[in-house]
Image 1: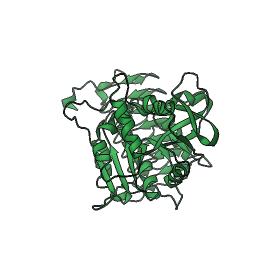
Image 2 (image 1 turned 180 degrees about the horizontal axis):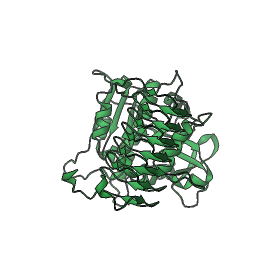
Image 3 (image 1 turned 60 degrees about the vertical axis):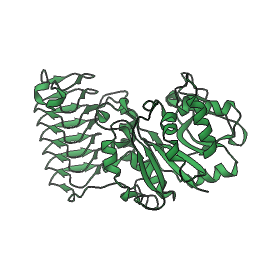
Image 4 (image 1 turned 180 degrees about the vertical axis):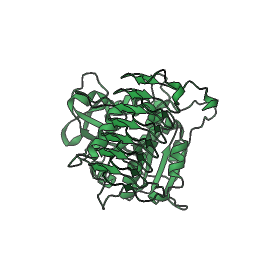
Length: 418
């Protein structure tokens, strides 16, 4: 039986703030050396599935550049399998994609080419490890029309997810998307295994409904359950997180640097593949302190600097006597001497001047400060917890030496000046 994977990688990711101002959500860096999309792709190849199509939409350029021909995942195949990237287009008498189901329906001519038996639909913005072969076996044993993966989530977070009602033998009895008052905490993971012909019919039926939002969670799944199709829930008990918000993105990183990490990046039997840059080894100078952190190649941590419970991507430089704590610093970020960075997400190529304070460790729910790609922060600035500095900001864009908590500073330059 032949399985084709479709990865939905068009997420605009507005809740990730400045991280998605210039890139789609699946292309956002994660865990020092990876991109979020790497986890879905690695799950495919580690599960022995090499026939993958990726549906892109919002700002796909960095994603396409990262994936290339699929070589790091052994998906650069010319005869059978391999990876195909379905970029946005507008066909005659149609519109741009208006929902997850519509994105697949508009590409279904390509998707069904070669007559796959099963279509495995994945979200490209989740962090987890799953052997999809187990789900395929479950699907066949239950003679299912559709199988969806489920996981138990904290009750207080259940309203963020599609909530699944499950009866005897894991048969799905109900589905409600992001309910205000969730009836349970059994969440939809956004991993769907369809029989191809059923998916083809379901997408076409949905396409003809003018009042549909053309979304799997809001329309397709509830409709199939109401019609009495054989829909089953595949129970997943491992680590899984939707890093669709700043808080969840930051917390997922903090999970990686805990004393007993909930997610194992070091499992030699389940390697997370990625496109890596050639960088020299990290360099840690005398009297520098690094504790409970992930530090990538090319990083330089100068004398007297302190890095605690943080993740540093390739090429990050932490100046002398600077402090980086519970923060995520992306590629080539530069922290000048004497600065303090706490509970921050600092994007690529950011330059932070000396004796600057950004973020802070406050009581209650963590407030994460953010600095967007290519921003330049002048020396001596104080940027409060939860504040945000947009991409390409320069010293002249600041109205003073202090940015209060919750304030968003954007560049004042015109787009053609950036």
